[in-house]
Every structure is written in C-alpha cells, then in structure tokens.
Image 1 (tube, one colour):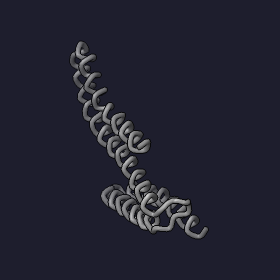
Image 2 (cartoon, helix red, strand yellow; image 1 turned 90 degrees about the vertical axis):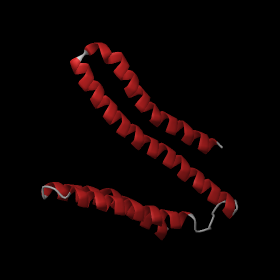
Image 3 (cartoon, rainbow, N blue to C red; image 1 turned 45 degrees about the horizontal axis):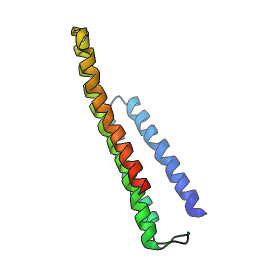
Length: 138
C-alpha cells in the first residue's frame, strides 16, 4: 500500500513539477533549456524507478517470474512503438505541413500533391500504433 501511494505521488509530481519549471522559465524570460533538462531528468529518473519496481521478481499472480518479465517487456515495447512513432510523425507533419502551406499559398493547384505528403507523414503514427497492437496481441 505504501509503494502504491509513493508511485501516485511520484506520478503527480512528475506532472506538476515540469509545468512549474516551464512557468518559472517563462517568468524569467528564457531558461527553456533548464526546463527541458529538468523534464528529461524527471522522465529518466521515474523511468528508472518504474523499471526497478517492475522487475523486482515479485509476482502477485499465479505466473512465473519469466512470464511476468516477458509481459513487462512486451508492454514497454508497445509503448515505445507508439510513442516514438508519434514523436516522429509529429516532427514529419510539422515540416511537411508548413512546407505544404507555403507552397499552396503560392500555387493553389498543388494542393492535392501536398496533402498526399502530409498524409504520408501522418501514416507513420498509424504504423506505430498497428505495430503496438500486434505486439500486445502476440
């Protein structure tokens, strides 16, 4: 019970403290690198804590430790597939959409071609989501 409360407090702080660091950096007119550094530090420290707590070897269900470890890796792989494809797709859409808007503003006849490129960039996210579903269903 105490570990669950500790995890809830850590997750709550991992949401509140980065916002506080961001607002503080906006108040001081700069320092976004400090806020970003704090966010990265908070993410990896909570990731390390969650990793240690997840792979302790204590399984409450009627499964073996090896099965629980494989299931844990499966969930991490699915989360990484979805998250990293979402980040990559967001970066690709940001570049493609801004270029498409600039090109459409000069020549409106190329709207169809530009939408195809933006759609291709968005499909990266869908592929990552499909892969994560395939990982979870295996």
